[in-house]
Figure 1 (cartoon, rainbow, N blue to C red):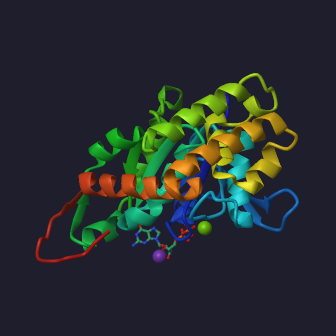
Figure 2: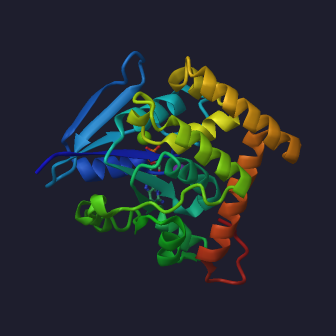
Length: 272
Ligand code: GDP
Ligand code: K
Ligand code: MG
């Protein structure tokens, strides 16, 4: 069978390395990311033909740290067959913030809800089935108490993963602009090699200078078009589009948490 390439992504301290070690055992190779002295760990998943790259732990894809840029560029340019997004399920608010941004890269995703022991400890339960439906991704829950569930990863047919509209949480006018920009990128052979034209369009609207510098240099026509769109949107919202997007993301996350988190012990008031 053809080897598959998966990438492990997630916040720092969510248990990514623990899970990487569990999946790969001793079949690991440590090197460096090209051009920088940041450690790159790769491995082969036991009993499979799946290669796994452990990406640096990050909180966001906002291009402000080297780790974020390394993770972003790897996903966008190498287009792994799937992302294994590890989250600390006992901190959904913070962890889903990255998950939503990873989804926007339009790479098939499997969501690994780690630290389920902590969720239980907080007297909470997560409706996994509902979470799968809302996000449109397959979810696997695990914890230090049960790593057997991770075996399910190799059983998932990633070719059948169809992401739903990952920009669906954004206001209609921003979505329309994203689609228009993405449409005008379709004939550009350099850009269509990247994981997602819609993600690039979103970054253009946000005016992410690092993304523009890295992927959209010399695209003056596109940049002009996006600048005009951003100007018009900001006239309407009275604040930077990047801010509008962050707010929309959190609003969606609060809605998800409200839908999927069940409080088992009513007397204990802990949040997730
Ligand atoms: P990384 O920074 O994402 O690579 O996280 P690590 O794998 O280094 O784990 C961070 C910490 O969380 C370590 O102390 C782990 O032992 C701990 N940890 C990992 N998985 C779990 C889990 O399922 N439950 C609990 N309670 N702790 C965990
Ligand atoms: K921790
Ligand atoms: Mg680690």
